[in-house]
Length: 196
Image (tube, rainbow, N blue to C red; front, top):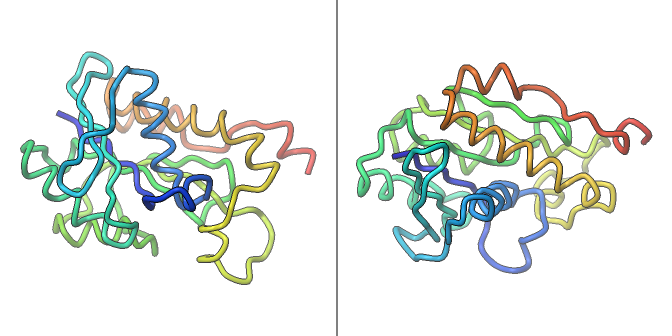
């Protein structure tokens, strides 16, 4: 069974913010595959279903971003999910807006949610989908930006970006992380981005 864990913060005030990209992708996967991600479990909202004919648990940890591992580790233990079948999805301030990176393993690169998961699991050997959210101009405070509302331009491009990230997660499940890296690593083409 795969665990697809999208990282974010619970609560309405965080819904439309860059730091909640992981939640948005899990919601998109849930809508596509008829999975209800509403069951409280291991401090997450979770739901089971199938993607590409394989059993999947979708989860949105409700521990707040910096404690994501407190939720992800018990879910993996309960369902006996190995690290290779965890797909962690989260925003990445080090990458420009619209960029998607599939990685088979690696360090958290300063992301506190990924850092928490790695600390609790005791390994960084798990696939992840990193979603670039840097707006392309200097930021006074990265933390403030991550918790602020999407800009008008980002809102216009968000749906296609979320779709592409959901495609990447499906690809990891169906074809494996190496094939997914070949297909998805790079920047989504966007006329809006290129005009501005």
